[in-house]
Image 1 (cartoon, one colour):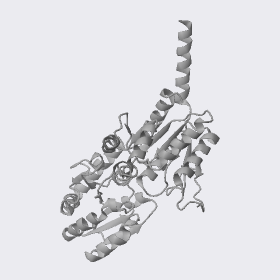
Image 2 (cartoon, rainbow, N blue to C red; image 1 turned 180 degrees about the vertical axis):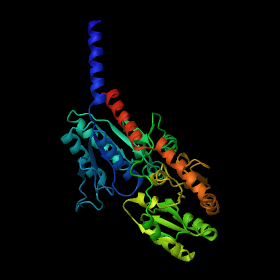
Image 3 (spheres, helix red, strand yellow; image 1 turned 135 degrees about the vertical axis):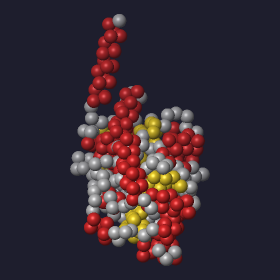
Image 4 (cartoon, rainbow, N blue to C red; image 1 turned 45 degrees about the horizontal axis):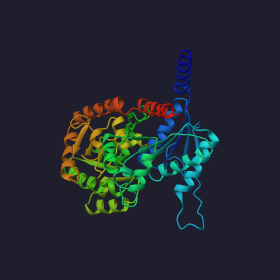
Amino acid sequence: MEEIRKLGEGLGTLIHELSHKPIKAGIVCEMGMGGASIVGSSLAEGLHRNGNDVHIISYSKSFRKLPKGIRFHHVPSKNFNVFQHFPLTLVTAGKIEDVIRSEELDVINVHYALPYAASAYIAKQMVASHGMKIPVITTLHGTDVHTVGVHDQFRSVTKFILESSDGITTICKFLAEKAKENFDIGGEIKIIRNFVDTKKFARKENPALRNSLAQENEKIIVHASNFRPIKRIDHIIRAFKAVSKSIPAKLLLLGDGPEMPKIQRLASRLNIKDRVIFAGAVRGVQKYFSVSDLFVMASENEGMPLSIIEAMSCRVPAVAVDRGGMPEIVEDGKTGYVAEYGNAADIAEKCLKILSDGGEIKKFGSNARKRVEDEFEMRKNVAEYERYYRRLMMTQGF
């Protein structure tokens, strides 16, 4: 009995220490404008605020400014003459292994399955040969589940690295169900929703900026993305043409990407280019959201796009389409409307239902802000990641 009592006391002490000591966390992600990049860097910031020792491992610096206390470990992108293409997976694996050993990390969280979960898997085997154990968590964001990951060339690899991960998280119910369906994942997929800093993303009126974008009687419809084909910005352009026939309006496009020239040509062809503002890749998107009346997204597929949540946090109602995780963000008829995918007329109609009544804009915007505070607030959702990390560190014996 005495031995059992001592064992229990020892286990209790270990649990107490693990649940209170700062976590040494490695976050592996790209650092551009995409959702996975922004979530990875925002998570790093939130973990750092909570007193944890955070290390970002990436081949590029963050698009958004990060606190000085977060350590950045650069994955060198030097080209080797013997390779026709840069071996990102292997070079990243080597860097992850180096940081695990040098910083004595407690956990690795990779954002986006390919190639980072594969790199982390290799790194884990490498450190295991030195007697080190570390849980690897893969966070799924969207195209790694429903587009890239299911490609014939990647499906079996994606399935293997997901099954080899010690934990899997994803940002919405839609992607969790899709991952189970596409890769036959039998274990738990933890849903931790995307989040924003509601103090940073708060509406701050800026008359000078608004006046530089639109006339006093014009409404501003905003969209932000990385301008890839899957975003279907052409649907937004066509919907906006219909909207602008009924009310004075400007379309503000934030971001840049491969579809930009095509979208510019379409706006010219539809004779609305003078009403479309191509702002490019701007910093401080919250100031643009703060002068906007409505956010629109028409993507073919999405996980849980941060841009919608950020806009809603700035009291901007949203119109999104019925694909992916977007209906999990926008409450139809309360924080905005959900339109039929591919139906520019329906998107336009839903936009006009909000924009035609100033009272509706204010009411829907207020509801949008409350929903973000309740469901997508940074402090709450970062705490979910922390609890998940600690659970794996304890239950899997790391």
